[in-house]
Length: 542
Ligand code: PEP
Ligand code: MG
Image (tube, rainbow, N blue to C red; front, side, top):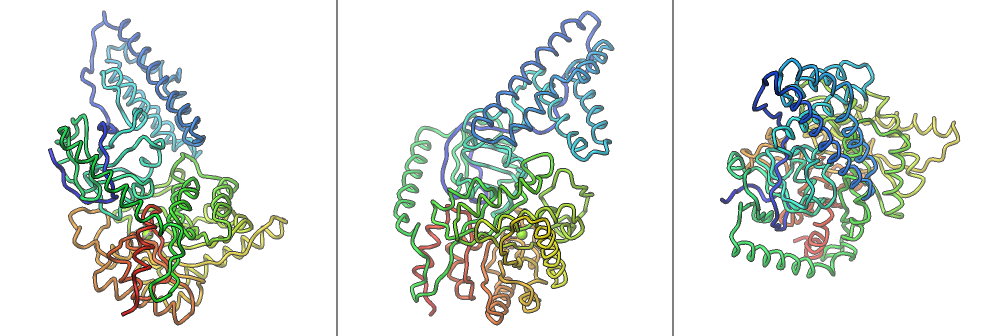
C-alpha cells in the first residue's frame, strides 16, 4: 500500500513499523468470577513486574546515552508502576470481581485525579504519567505489550496520527528512522524536528494512515513525500539505490559545507543553523553552520515534567555559546502556546491557541518564568556571542517591556556580583503586525529575524499544521513577500541585519527570492546548510 503526503524532511529509510499506542485501551473483559480472583491477582502482579522492568530498561538505556533528564521521567514511571497504593486499589477492585485490566485503568484514573488536584505544580503535572503507567499495565494484561514510546526498542519507522513536540523529544536518539503522520505540514513541529534530527518524514497522509497501522515494514521517501507498507524486495532495493544517490548528492555538496557563504556578486550572507537543543550544536557546526540563527528554547522546557532552573538554562545556553566560539548564537525566549504546551504552566483551554496566550505575551505576563530565562541568557553571554530574540511580537511596546526586563535582570545580576556578558536583543518578525510596524520595531531592536512559518499562517489565515491547506502554506505568496520586503526595507533604513529563520530559509527555491528582497542571514535545519550555501554562492542581483 502506498501513502502520499508532504515530503517534510528529505531522505529515504526502510525499517520495522512502530505505532505508539497512546490511546486508552478498552478492556476486553470488565468482570471476572469469584474463582478467578487469586489467579487474576497473580496475573496483575506479573504484569506490574514486566512493565516496571521494561520501563527501567528504557531509563538505563537513556542514562547510558547521557540523557539524564529523560531517564528521570522513566524512573518515576517505573516507581509508579510498582506503587503499593495503586496495587492495593486494584486488589480491592479485583476482589470485587472487576477484571484487573479494567481495575488498573479505573484505579489509575482515580489516582491521577488525586495528583491533578495537588497544589504543587510538579506533582499535579504527574497525573498524565500515572495514566500512562496504568495504561501500560492494562495493555500488558491484555497481551498488547506495545504502548507509548517506552516500547520503542529498535530503530523503527514511527507511524502516528500526529506527533507533538513532547513526543518527538522523548524518543531516544537513533531509534526513529523516519516519521509518517496523518496530520501536519512542512512547517508543523514534527517536520521541523525531523529535519533537525536528519531523518526522513512524510506528513499529512490523512486517513490512509489507518490502513497502514498493521504493516510490519515501511519504506519512506521523505523527498517525494510517500511511504510504502510491507515493500517487496525490488522496492527495498530501489530505496537502497535512492539512499546511495542521496549520499552521493550530499558528498558533492561537501565542498560548500565549511565555505564562507558569499553571493556570486560578493555579498556576505551568513548561513546559520536552527537548534532545538544544546546537544545539536556540535552536529550543526559539522554541517557548516556559521552561527545559530534560532535556538528554540521551548524544547528545553518540554523534554521534562518540571521547569528547568535558571542554572540548568544557563548550562544549556552557555554550552551552545562555547561550542560556537565567537560566532553569533541567537537564543529565542520561550515560545509556547499554540501546539506547544508546557508542563507546570497553567495554560487554560483556548479555542484558537495560535491566536492566544503564547510567546512574548505569556513571558511578559509570567515574570517568574521569564526572569530566570533572561538571567540565564545574560550569564551565558559571558561565554560567547549570545543574542536574545523575542517571539510573537505585534507592537513596539512589547519589545520595550521585554528589553526593560532584560535591563532589570542585568542590574540584579550585577548587584549580586554575578558575571554577565554583552547581549544584543532582536525581534522575530512573524506576525503581519510586526512586519507592518517594522520601522517602529527597528528603533528597539538590534536585528530582525523573519519567522516565515508563522508569518505565512497569520498572513494567509491558514493553519500551518492543516494538511488540507497545503496550497496556502508557501512563503512565496505575494502578500507574504510584500511583508518581507517591507521588513527588509525597514532593517536597511535602520542599518540592522535581517535574517530568516522560518523553514523558507532552507528552501533552495525560495533562497534566491529572499536574497533579492534584501535578507542578510539565513537560518535552517543544519543538514540543509551545504545546499543553501551552494545556492547563495550561485546567486547574483540581476
Ligand atoms: C517561525 O514561525 O517561522 C519560526 C521560526 O518559529 P516557530 O517555527 O518555532 O514557530
Ligand atoms: Mg514562530
